[in-house]
Length: 196
Image 1: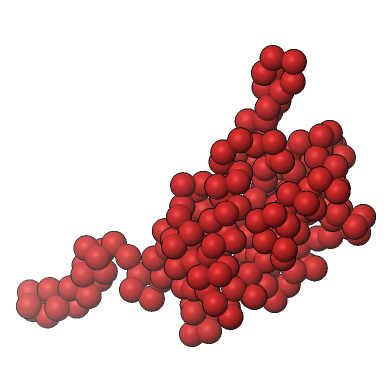
Image 2: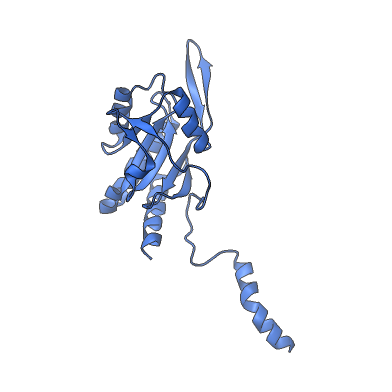
């Protein structure tokens, strides 16, 4: 009787000891599948066309909030995103990077377009007026604030990359320290998980 009870409890205990679901992929980024934020946006691209997340359905979308005069974090993240696309080879064509400005007062459409294209011609820059920018940032739980520096200002902001799968579902948040290799590995894993 005791032996039978032990054998029936053992599989459940083994799963608890493992602490993970063997079928669930392990990402470098934080898995936020099922999150109730970052559901959509309504912003304007550099050509004046209103864009939403649905416009990029079928692609693996990386959304990053930043600004043109960002000294270090923004360019590093965007360089890594461009490198990750190249590392994926042909699958890199399935990845779309969107850059959303948190400094709409200085980041004109033309300036944003030039900035995004400097990292990769496929990158799409998006902007809104200050009210729309605040609305989208709130939806994505992005913090940003102007900080005076001498006669001008910089912008402190959340430095996460939000990753959506090809069905438009938010799946991952990548910290700004994530390397290009880690970004590529996570995207590859996400693509493979959706094929299985």
